[in-house]
Length: 247
Ligand code: ADP
Image 1 (cartoon, helix red, strand yellow):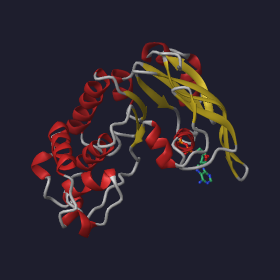
Image 2 (cartoon, protein in one colour):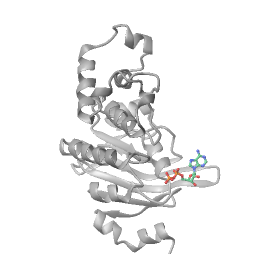
Image 3 (cartoon, helix red, strand yellow):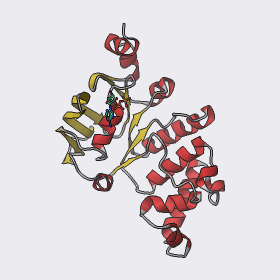
Image 4 (cartoon, protein in one colour):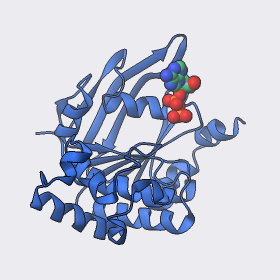
């Protein structure tokens, strides 16, 4: 069994694009059962790291372990099956499907026609509706997703991730481009879901959100971690100030 405190771990994770070392020798441990944040200046490798971990791109070197299981270079759907759900920086939803159809599409690759013509699983629909209530967009279930505000689309995406019952949820910039009222709701949801035992790994630029929400913060600069700890510790770390301010 994996140590109780460990969730996702990387050792020596490395990925270059041509001559650009996007992620270099990154050894990181995320805390199980906690809200972990990954922060760092633009271009520090956060997205590439995220993509290597979720199987969207293959690392050049290093290992990724989830709850003690080696998941390095596994296909994205296999990593999802292992219990890691993820959202995307730019929402991945189907604009011309309704909110409810998007929820059903999140669990299996189904054509719109099939979703509409009664190939529906009643249990799945109940679950989808309950999750829409939970994120506060159940009144929009028959609206096409393209007519939702960007923040509502983010809530739909999070609800879609929850359809897979992931033990661990990776969020890429959940507050990016979202109005302040919905940022608050997303933050509250993350805290509630965490209180129920789900681990979060969040990449986020909104420092206020990161610092108020996270238990453990990992700071990237130039492709790897330069500091980690509680928000208070990280905020007062001179290396972090240097990375952000270039002083
Ligand atoms: P962050 O998410 O912290 O802003 P990224 O992982 O997006 O950082 O980028 C890290 C570095 O890798 C940057 O210099 C970026 O330009 C480069 N990079 C990222 N993806 C690619 C790619 N597909 N091709 C070439 N360079 C890339």
